[in-house]
Image 1 (cartoon, rainbow, N blue to C red):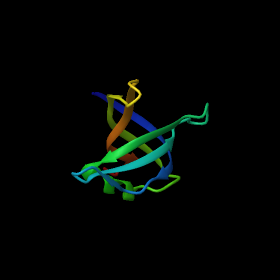
Image 2 (image 1 turned 180 degrees about the horizontal axis):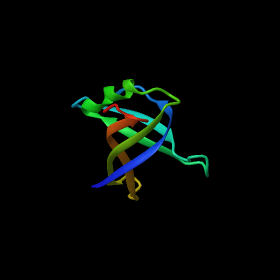
Image 3 (image 1 turned 90 degrees about the vertical axis):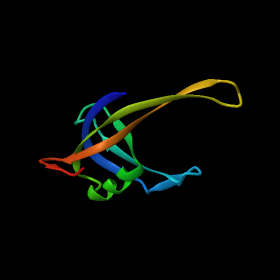
Length: 100
């Protein structure tokens, strides 16, 4: 796992989703990480007990997130192997204030 830090302005905070037999909880958040340059939108996920932490931030706020870059391989029914990656965040800091 690779620890990653990224800052940007909150664009979207998705609803809490549950899936699987264990009712795993997940929430997607997107930030604009361009800093005024070339467009760069970063999507990250809050998992399990971290999903409520999305309630502590608002669209338009500047934040810095810290998480782990996670990846997995999946072979579909077409027998093509695909790699899926996501940034699972465990800490969110507003400008000058730690939220999570």
